[in-house]
Image 1 (tube, rainbow, N blue to C red):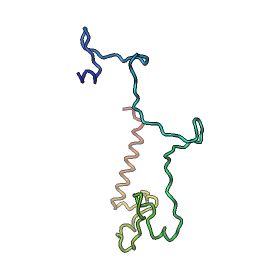
Image 2 (cartoon, rainbow, N blue to C red):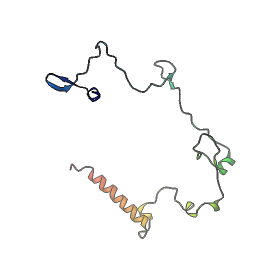
Image 3 (cartoon, rainbow, N blue to C red):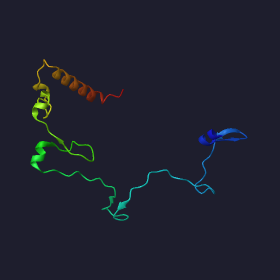
Image 4 (tube, rainbow, N blue to C red):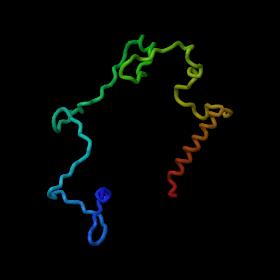
Amino acid sequence: MAARRLFGATRTWAGWRARELPGPAAPGRRFVRDYAKRPVIKGGKGSKAGVVSDALKDPEVCTDPVRLTTHAMGVNIYKEGQDVALKPDAEYPEWLFQMNVGHPKKLEELDPETREYWRLLRKHNIWRHNRLSKNQKF
């Protein structure tokens, strides 16, 4: 019986068939929406300067030069607590200071005997193949 109500099937003299949906003005029926509640907007109805009441605020920007050089600002993911203090360079691994943080190197700048060269060459070939195969119909 619960399955019949769940799937909307009724038994008639002709057999099983789907139940028709009632019209919006059917007596004794009430439709309930299960949508999310709309946010409350300040500024009245129709005003263009309305702002959602639970607006997020940007974090405060630190301008203290001493704190900027001794702490990693914005790394703390918790609401409470202090920013992480930077350690001396000797406590960090050497590869950290050898990383390329600028623009990626072009293919012409790399040595063909390195793995990095061949990986970049493969990536360029894949990009080229994808661009060429975009126009094919099948």
